[in-house]
Image 1 (tube, rainbow, N blue to C red):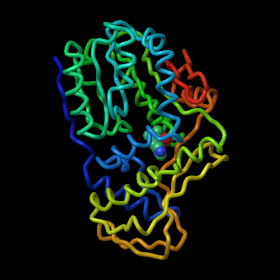
Image 2: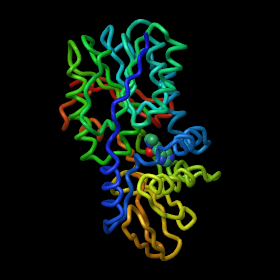
Image 3: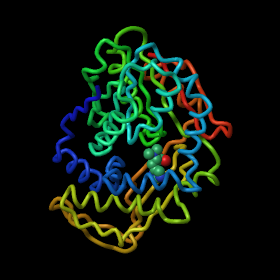
Length: 321
Ligand code: AVI
């Protein structure tokens, strides 16, 4: 029987403090997790179908090729713990590739609406598989829910969302995930993580600045979300979307560039922008295979498998800890 558990979300004052800290720095920033209100999730879904945005298609092609091999590395009866589960489509590739191997499914995400929808759909499509969703910011320490008790835990973090974290955050996340996943029964912790691979800026830049302007709309939407969360007056019309390849850091960056000198109020605080000044809204690291393995090793994980799509655009690592 399926069951959905809602754990309390992070308190609003903490989010407001994070927003103000970001807008108060010399390089203004906003937390990328704030892209994903209902409108942002919809826009991101559209991004995944854009001709320029190869990331999702490459990962799906990888799963078409290798889902059975990846699922075969899971211990029998394991709870499949999916971090950042916006929908269940990728987890289902593993579940359906190895019928009976997974004993439970635990989608973890910050968006309650997405989790409820997953629970509903899974009840229809896989009624015999216990599902327990956890609404949480997975960058915070996470406890496995009751449905995972007595089972090995098999972590799954697809989508290259890990690329949206800076290396210090990746290290903290991977150590916490090791604690979480090794609290399951039996064997070492297992974690399968999808990462977009390093490639030419000629391929990367259009993927983050598409001709139809969907990524621009996604970037600008963060301002509306911040306005709602923190009683703000940021004007989306006053900013332009910019995507940049930072070769030194090995990452794509998204910025919102102020079209003119302007002011806004956010949670009662006056924020001033110079003409041309940017708010840095997102990093999307493009890890090489070796670079990611080295990072994971610093968090106590050892590499045990690696798969790519035919065009070698996207990689999936199996880590044991
Ligand atoms: C969710 N994440 C992996 C996407 C990425 O490619 O970094 C978010 C995104 N930003 C712009 N386009 C897509």
